[in-house]
Length: 127
Image: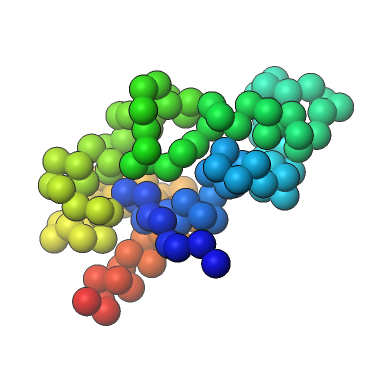
């Protein structure tokens, strides 16, 4: 089992398809990403998970491992990551202001982001 690796926002990198494809060349994770890559024109309609893996080095190495220009472009300017860096904390859940306005905006899309918030809140309650 992989050690929990949290992004600044609380997402577990080990559960993230982009991270798994980049770091482990995980074809199952790449398969989940096929529709998006095809819709963006990054791979051809007849290409499969292997095509996603081929461009994986340009994907995600985790928000704490960014070196240079991040593929997703907004990682370097992520308010949550910048704030955690300035406050010298590992993730938003360690902040006394959590959940703040920026974090609430981040999680408004629901899904995995909402789960990350719930996880960080549980850490805060249990500490």
